[in-house]
Image 1: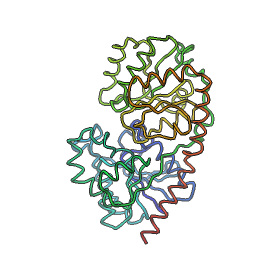
Image 2: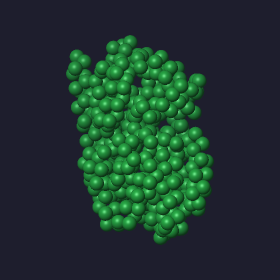
Image 3: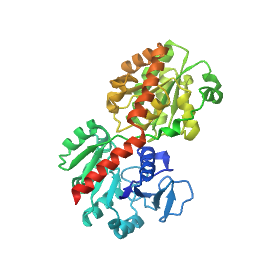
Image 4: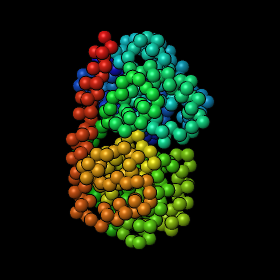
Length: 396
């Protein structure tokens, strides 16, 4: 099978988060299983010196980082990612692939690829990665509605299938958009081999000595309104005013100026001196943040599929997430708590975990078992290959 994967940004441009890490792991696993994988992407956020508009081999995957123009910039700081070099290459080489897998929705690479797939009658799958959830889609609503009707709707309707990460996403988005094509549900996965040699817990405390006798609550993700940081501020504020053995560690990149607002909230709660902003963490530093913490919290208002939840669990942390994270396995496996996005609920969950060391430890063990059994990228790759082959058979 010759697979073309199109995504607006790709590893190692990890600063933009989202599906990049999971897609990288998936592509590597597919290559190991004999699938010929090519990636077309743009060089947005790419710091490494890579010759643009030329194919390069990256971890066994053939990747082309196309230059792009920040045309209109109506969907964010990276613009629409209009790429004339990618357009020319799609027109020239698209016919050579058996199946095209498009990741993301609100950008030029998605729309252009869907257009040429229909032109050359090539089967293609779109994976919106949570971007079509009603709560998420309402952000910048006035911009998305016209663009959806002009371009995205046609791309989605013409897809051979739409790949969702959870059943909840499939039910809400497919029905809401009145799509008649096939919906497939396969979660993102994680390369658990990257977590085999974890740092010792004390590594984080050597970096931040004032954490020596503290119970660390970790938030890791984009510093953005949708992550429920107002809830986190209020719940943690109440907790930290009642006990002096806790510390909040916030790791992530500021988005849309939300970090300034978050700092104001924490100062208003009177607990700013009990919070550390670690900024962007990657590699071993990221692992140290996980293994040095006592629990992970993600009180999001909307979440497509959080890789950070998987990473926290594989590192042995109990997790507290909201029901909008669409990760019911956490509750089924008793690996943490699923709460309503309310500060009272988050505060109570904090207290229950921090006051029960034995149960917190067992939650961490159950989370590890869950990830190894259900979200191992090797198993996810097998499921993806099975679905892709089934789609190709039906196309003949």
